[in-house]
Amino acid sequence: MKKEKDVMSRHQGIGAGIVKAMLWVYSSFAFLILIYIAYNSLRPRQDILGNTFGKPARLSLANYSKLLFQDHFLRYFANSVIVLVISLVLLVLISSFTAYGISRYRFKGKKFMRIYFLIGLMFPVQLGIVPVFQLMKQLHLVNSLGSVILVSAAGISMPVFMLTDFFSKLPKEIYEAAVIDGAGEWTAFFKIMFPMATPVVFSVCITSSVQIWNQFFLPLIFLQKDEYKTLPLLVVKYTNKLINTMDLAMAASALSTIPILILFMIFSRRILDGVTSGAVKG
Image (cartoon, rainbow, N blue to C red):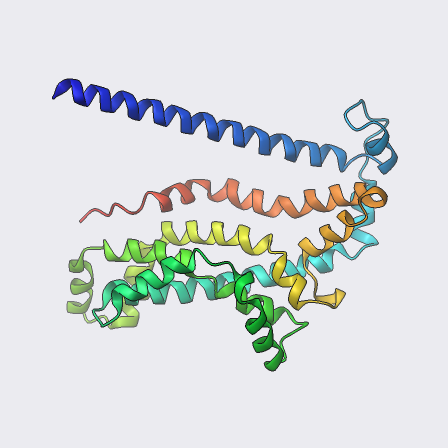
């Protein structure tokens, strides 16, 4: 029996070592790409094309200056922020209500609902974009940020899956104690249950923020006017003419990456707490 445990622990140690090595390789590769983008964003286009990996002739903020003051970068940035904030608020509220209802109440079709949201993880929005576009057209939301916000906020499969797992493991005694103290359903949810789910909510916010911030397909389909376009469309605008605008493409990519990196660095501990919050103490 002891030998079997030793063999099992040895295999687990090897598996964990392989996973760590793969994560280190992936992280190092991603870090090098970020450094490459940031480095070339400070160089003129001729220098990037003619001496890609060599010593730069000069480094300057000219690309950022042109991007900010001549190419309406702040307008694209503001549109992305509006889409992100409103979509995230709606997504968290809808997914929290849904997950709490599935885990808290007993009703017919409860298992089907859980399976339904699990299956939703397997199907990208591209599969149903035609009827969604027709719906947005009827609602007169094409060429407005509202269309991107609504469709982004509807991507609740993963948040519902994560929050349902958390709420279902909360001890029933917590809710019963709140009811005894005179709390109604809304009070119990907003003042007790939802605050307890804060680590998972933070994890949902960060993972969903990355998806919404980098969303390219939805703005491409719904936003044809420049005044409503978001940052990913600006980056693609430069990459489509990469030879002529490589310097601006690098600067735009660097600037669009900074907000998500800052959020991740600030809330990285919260993300880990959210991932490990599946085990709830009674």
